[in-house]
Image (cartoon, rainbow, N blue to C red):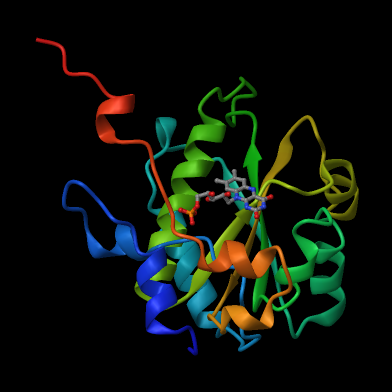
Length: 199
Ligand SMILES: Cc1cc2nc3c(=O)[nH]c(=O)nc-3n(C[C@H](O)[C@H](O)[C@H](O)COP(=O)(O)O)c2cc1C
């Protein structure tokens, strides 16, 4: 991991109230080293995702992924990404698509599916952070292309977000504007801006 200490400090969340280090240290990286992630570690990430909460415990998530070494499969997934995501994600160790199953087993619409997939993705990302693996979610992909590539029935399953996963490399390897984004400080709305206490 060559990221300079300085740039990592910039990325760490500067919080007003104390939060767990895993939350502080997760951020959406783009500069991946190309170093592979062991398949057993990918399974650990998916296991973590599986322990997210979900409405009726329906677990409406699915993941389809390829290691960079699975060249053709990786290239196929990568080709679904929009131009703003392609230049940096090609050095990810693993590309994943996270998908939501839109219906419960009884055929009724699961209105919580998107929520629950997000919960699973967040759980996966925090597990990744604990393992020194960085990730970047990408909603910028060609949905029709991914649906066709993966042979999905759009009535049942919808690809929601791609995830690039890998180990960090120096931001200097990135071209602009990605290099600047990689070293830009992160910011958030303050807690008081999005929450209210009722008395
Ligand atoms: C559903 C979703 C879609 C996203 N799509 C993209 C994307 O297509 N390209 C990109 O560079 N970042 C994308 N992001 C990353 C966000 O821009 C990033 O999470 C946000 O700016 C906060 O930064 P942080 O994750 O480093 O805290 C996406 C994030 C989410 C949750």
